[in-house]
Structure formats: structure tokens, C-alpha cells
Length: 430
Figure 1 (tube, rainbow, N blue to C red):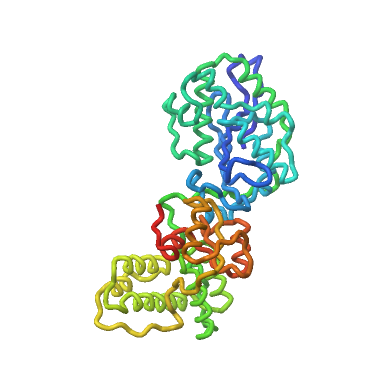
Figure 2: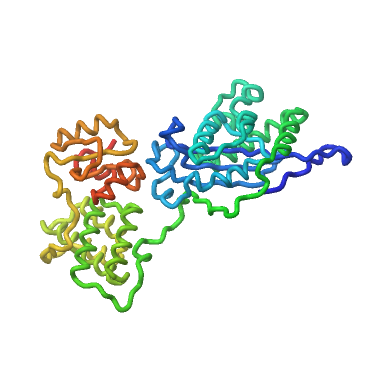
């Protein structure tokens, strides 16, 4: 973080040491701070009196609960699994805020969440800090009368680009540019320098904490993740045998129930291979056997439908199956080999009428409507996870909700909504 600058707008005999603006934005799991909703992402843009951005810092935060309306903020549960918790970054935030004037678009919202998070972490910002901050939304009444109060509305008035709305970093940067435009419209307003002088005089944490954590950032659309198979240890010699192979395949069968491998399931497969002493090469062989068995089932009636081909393609991608094996499986065949009972494809046959099914997260349809459909299909929706529950359906299969954590600890399959609509209820999602 940059040291407090010397503003040169005054003559050399009357220079003033000024603080900085800390323009912030938070993305949260909901609207209610305190005991329930949490911050899931935060950004701090450090801005000087001239409107120059000195620093951009942002990180995802593990909120230790489900992420709420992911359709709004776009944060995936898999992205926050290894993200710091708020308590991990609280001292660094103190240092970044010290000697600054906090600014936000709708500061009241962000301030309530910050206050609650610092309190939960056993810390507190100085009493004066948040109340003396600036709100670019409130300031729009003076500088942009009639323009609307949303960040997008205000940015449009100045042709400020808002690249990814509801991304903390881009929202904070847009708000920083908005503040700079306000200062350009009213350059002689004494409040700017007065507030920054006060900020410099009330620095409460001039030095950073001993260790700064590496921020966790959103996955970019074009970023390529390392396939989980490539993260399995390469062993020579190998100590596993047929029994260990069946154990791995059994876990794989359960993980592929919804034709999706969550980050939790990938980690479980890696851990299983390591525990059983199965090498990366053997895992690839087991995946090839599994894929071949799925292909045999698809061709058992002599016809490969478009839906079955789509299923094979999905499994091939999930298991890192070579393109030539997928191509061979897609071609018509005269006979099919008998299916290996130890490598069968995942189905819904483990569920029976009357089984308990639990829902978690913000689903695409009202919870009551989904529960009604489950009842019609013969299942029993349940409000809590117990060892008698057979399936947990999550809005995000990597959910960190208490229900999801409990289900994983009991070995209960955790699936996404696609499985609910397309395989369990056979009702396409709206």
C-alpha cells in the first residue's frame, strides 16, 4: 500500500500531507448482515486526491455458508473453497483502511456488513471511520440530479465503463472513477482536502500485518483448470489390486451420479487414489473401463440416441477419456460386450419411494414447489440432514452450507439441480 502522498496543489510553503480514498465494494450472500448473511468478496481501490488509482486489491472470501443468489454475483462455490475467511484478512483490511476515507456506492450497505464481519472476527474499526465515509450514491443527488441511483445509472451519465457488474473489483473501480468525476465537477470544494487531511491525521495502523495472504480471485472464463486426474500421484511400483480398484470405482460411480464432478468430489477421488495406493496411470485405465461400461449400456438396445451420445461426451470430458475412445464408442456396433458389474454407470436405482431428500441453497424454483414435486414423485422432502437421508440436492454441488457439510460427513450423495429435474423428476428446468 502506498504511503500518504503530499498534495502539490498548494504552493511549496503550504503543502499538506493527505490521506487516500479507499473505494470499496462487497458481494454478499444476501441482504442481512450479522448472524446469517456474510461477505463473499471484497475489493479496495486506493485513490488519491487527483483521482489516480494507486492500488487495486480484491479477494474472494469463504463465507462458511452457502453463497445465496449466485445468479446475481456469479461466484461459484468451487472458487471459494480455498479462499481466506474474513478473520484471515481482517488485519490486512485494517491496514488498508488506516489513513483513508472509505467510499462506496451505497456505503450504508457495505458498512453494515463490514461492521458485522469485524465484530465476528473479534476486531473493530475506529468508531469514526465508517460514519465519516462518502457514498457516491448519495452524492449523485447533488452531482447527477435525476440520473438514477444505481451504479450503472451513475456510470452511464459519465460514460464510465462498468465491465462486470456485481464483481467487487470492477464495481469498486467504477465507483472510484465516479468519485474522480465528482471531484472534477467540484474541484474547489474544500471538503475533499479536509477529509483527506483528517484521514492522514487519524492513521491507526501504519504498518501491515506480518504476513499478507495471497488473494483468491474469480476464475476467468478462459482459464484452464488442471484436470483432477493430473493431480493424482504417479507411482512406481504400485501397491494396489482389484479390491482397491473396486473401491475407487464405487466412489466414482457415486460421484458421477449427476454427471458432474464437484471440487469436493474431485478432492475425494484424489484422496481415495492416494489412500489406496492407486497410480495416475491406473486411474486412467479405470476411467477407460468405466467409460466402456457406460458405452455398453448405451448400445445395449442397438441404438445410440442423441441423449446417450451427449451423456457419453459428458463422461468422457469429466474422466479425461481420449478423443479416439469417445469416437469409437460413438460408432455403431454389431455386438456389445457384457457389462462388467463392478464398473456400472451411475443411475437413480439406489433411490426408492419414500426415501428422504433434502434441499439446500437458493434454487431456481420456490422451495415449496420443488418439495411438492418430490412428494408427487413418491419421495419425502426433509428439512434436516440425518443418516436416514438418501440424497441432498444443492443449488451448487460445492455448497458450503451446514446441510452440505453434514451430508458429506455421512457419505450422502450431493447433487445439483440438473439431476433433480432431468434424472429424478424428469421435468426439464425452466
